[in-house]
Length: 270
Image 1 (cartoon, rainbow, N blue to C red):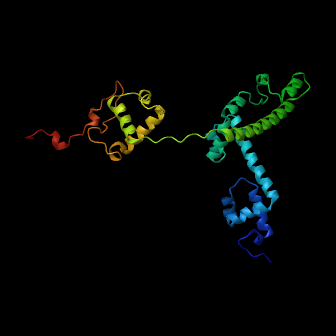
Image 2 (image 1 turned 180 degrees about the horizontal axis):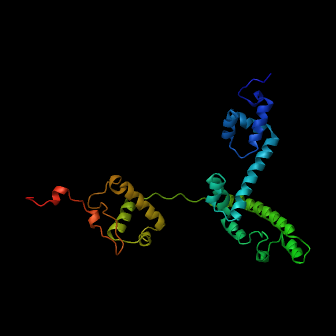
Image 3 (image 1 turned 120 degrees about the vertical axis):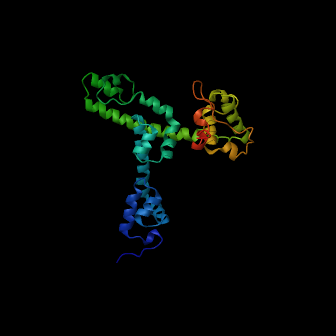
């Protein structure tokens, strides 16, 4: 007779416990596993805590996923390609890769030799140099070199994983951006539209602000009409049409003027 179902893991049947343990050996979240198993997250978490083998397999699965991310990055994938193609959280990929961006770029310059380009053997890589030396004297096969390179790449990914955790722990958190004040937003609009300054020139008036940040703030204000609606700028300060580049149409171009109706275009007496 099947054991009764209840709120705790002790009420699970052996088959149910086994099914949950199999799911826990993957990188699926606890909430996903609970939904698939038809149990609460507390039950799944209790199974994980009470099963040392499940904890080991789950830790190995997460470790393997991190190595896979690093291997793809070493192969030339961008972070965006990794989280899109592998269906992995963007935050996870960034947290892993950003602290070792420079190390990954350096490792790419000494990428693995696949047997197609003998010139790649000129790079010094301590873990495969002995095998390459034997290969050049005829005492090692291509298979030996490729195997050694694959093992070296595994060690490289593991070393980068350790370095990523170390760099992330010692990295200074990025400060949060300071919001623009209403006066700053009005001044940006004035410098851009009235004085026709470039963004690099405008940035000189705002120490600590980059030209890209100023341009994004200005674009948001233009789209949402924030200068007049949110800040209540008087009509004298109300921003006009954006300043045109030399050679372009000015603010008073025909397309910017209100179009006359058909009745206005017909001369009187006709």
